[in-house]
Each structure stands twice: as structure tokens, then as C-alpha cells.
Amino acid sequence: MSLTRSWLEIDTKKIVGNYEKILKRAGIPVIPVIKANAYGLGVEKILTLFDKAPYFGVATVEEGLQLKRLGARSMVLGGLVDGEIAPGVEADVILPAGDVPLARKISAEAVRQKRSAEVALPIDSGMGRIGLLPETAEAEIREIMSLPNLKVRGIFSHLSCAPHPEDGYSLRQVRVFTGLVNRLKQNGVAIPDVHIVASDGYAPAFAEAFQPPFTMARVGLDLYGFNQNPLLADMKLEPVAQLKSTLIAVRKLKEGTGIGYNRLHTLPEDTPVGTVAIGYEDGVPLACSNRGNVLVNGILCPIIGRVAMDYIMISLAKAPNAKPGDEVVLWGTQVDRSIPISAWCETKGTHPHDILCAIGNRVVRRYL
Image 1: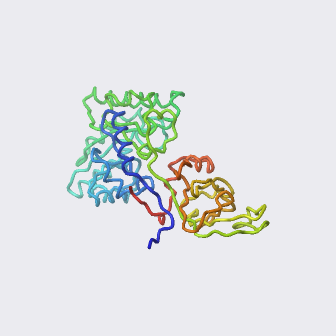
Image 2: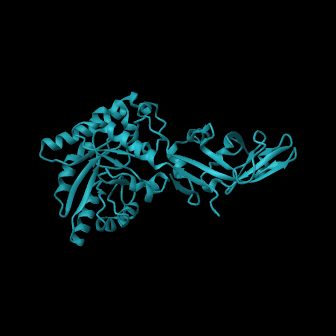
Image 3: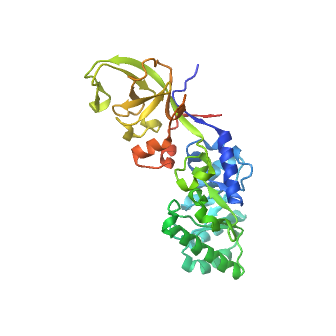
């Protein structure tokens, strides 16, 4: 007997297929970014799918320590808090040295531990978030490279407007970053891992970011096929997951019955109403209250009333044969009908990263 109420069904073959397409497009090694529990899909399983990965991108040292326990190496893409430095050095995580004072702290900790620490240098080419500024970076990088027990493994940046290459901003970022790396090389400073591209950067407009001096690229959301950027349509990346739940009650309710908290919906006529065992704790946006649809037996059924923590209610007027125990698809495919994840993105006014990362822990991850 299953205790599972709701589950995320994940096709691992499609993830591998997407990665192979990305590798082919890039033509250089690609770092899978599996931060935030592999974008909510479950890092322990997803980690095992990338035997061609040089290492993995994470957001925090805590995530890096988890990968270390699983036998993989990682690089923190972003910043650090002081408490992350010692365990990061000890676990051989590639740490970001976004300024000279931080690099000194990493160096001092590596000296204390009597070991070498590898770092990567984030360059703020236009994101305005963290990193060395291009106009002062050359001198700062020389100082960082002179610190004891410190090895500079990489240098990287991040495109802030990659979905919109038409405005030229991201290409200017690429060229600012390229100019810095080339000047360093001309002055005898060679850094092995050089990358700026992430998921949206696989558009043809950024072809120069896969040529020297670039030696690597990164990929996050594209692994899972949910990127809505039309500039990537030719890659034919496949969505790899479907969110499903269970119909736990079906009742015929009278005209005028109020549905859910605050009676956001009142039945206009006698209606069969289904209760589905999933709610906002599981990742259903509150914005789906009285909006959107689910699939039951391949039939679109509207969500009625307010989304609760543990349940949603749906009208079964068009699915009169539905019964408790039936599968409910929140986004994905059932029979010959589909609801894309973009439907929730539009309803919530957000993007797929947010939808995936909001899926709760009690939603079981099932791998095909």
C-alpha cells in the first residue's frame, strides 16, 4: 500500500538526452548546476547522470559538502559567508574569491589547515551582484595569485540579460570579460577554467562565448527542459518532469455551496467536486486559487476556491466518471492532453525556476 499522495515524476533519460544536446551545442566541457536540490528534482539521483561533468555548480558550501559526501566535487557560484570558509577548504570545494579580503581569509584558512585551496574568481561584468570589477581586477587578481596555499582554478562571470540578446547588453558583458581574460593572458596570467555562459547563453547570439579564451560553460534549467526562451527552440530540449497528485474525494454538492476558505467560489449549480491531495505547502501557487486547470482522465478540470496548505478543490462537471484514487496531473501529460509548467508561470507571474524550487519536501520524487 502506497503512502504517496503527490509526486514529481522525473524522466532521467530525458535529462541525459538534454545534457548530450547541450554538450554538442557547446563543444566544450559543461558544468551542470545542481544547486537548490537540483532545482527541486533531487540532487542525490540527478548527480549520478553526468559522467562527463568536470565538476558541479552549487550555491552554498553546505551544498558542496553534500556533494562531497556523495563522491563529487563542486564549485560555489556566488559569494561566501565567513563560516563557510573552513569547511569549504577542508572538503576541497572550489570557493569563489570575489574580492581580495575574502581571498586572504581563504588563504589563511588553507595555511592553518596545511592544505591548498582552489578558488574561482567571479567577475562582475554587468550583473551588479558580486565579484571583482573589470577596471580593477587585473591588479587584484595578481595579489590573489600571490597568496600562500591558494590556487586560482577558474575565472567566471554571469550574463544578466541573456534571454534578450537583441539589446546588446549581454554581448557587451561577454566582450568586457573576454578583454580582461585576454589581457591577463598577455601578461602571463593563465587561468584554466574560463566561463560565462549559463542556460540562456546557448542561443546563437553568444557563439563567441564558446570559443577561446572560453574553456567551459555552465547549464542549469536547460538540463530539465523547462527553459521558455524561444531562441533555444532548435535544441529541442525536453521537459523531464510532471507533477501529479491523487483525487481523494468526490462529492456532489448543491448549488450555492461555498468552496474553500473565504468562500472564494460559490457553486452556480449542483456540481461534482473533487478534493486533490496537494496544496501550497507542496508548491501549488496560491495564485492558482479559482484559476487554472488540472487533468483528470485526460479532461481539463478547473481549480475552484482557494488553494489551501494541503488541498485544492476542482470541478468535475466535465469528468463525471472521476472517482477517489484517480491520478491528477497538475502539469504534464495525461492521455492526449497536456498542461505545461508555463501555465503556472503565467498565473503566478514568475519563471520555471521558481515553480520547481517551490515544490515541497513531502512531494515524492519518482525516477523513470
